[in-house]
Image (cartoon, rainbow, N blue to C red):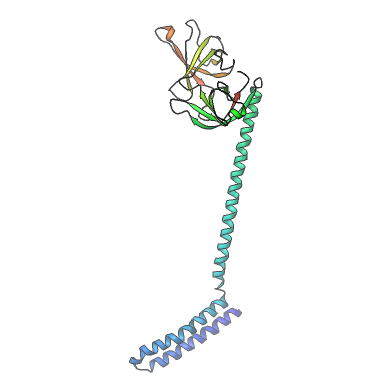
Length: 273
């Protein structure tokens, strides 16, 4: 109520001043109007501005600008807090990813406990060209040598073809130049498995004995022959049998056990040399 009274008084004063000026102006000649307007502007405007400021001060309108500064400060603080939370979320995701990787390593080591192995993760893939290789983050300083077998939880990945001090290149079994001596689990018949240009999950089985019985969904594993891969490592499953006029030339397509597109962690077997 106090503010309303103050505001009313100020309004009355401004009105009286304006009326006085109107009376004065009505009694002057037109030629003097321009001159008087200048006087009016120079005298009245500062007074009006002062009263307007005082009115705003009384009514609390000046707090609007103070509130803007306060909101800007709060906004900046909120932005900083959001950045901190986003960074914390990234850190948690990284920790989660590292934990998942460690779990995969533990599962792998438990599954292939009969082998001495070194865990590794893939730092580069080149599996979409003719030469289908991957690079892992372990090398000579970790005891990695050429021709060592590389496996994943699902089965065979390939073997080491070159090393540096801290990395190694793996030629995968889906490479067309790779041949793996294998056996079919049910019949125990020996076959040779090669990579194909079909996709990153298809192998081709050839050199199938003429009297061998091929069964779709039969599994295929390494035979242990050839000096690189140990015996009994899972390779994949027969998904299609292709018969030809000459039984010697028949072949089969094998679905790889390992999903090479999603492969991230591996083990290098070091005691099969």
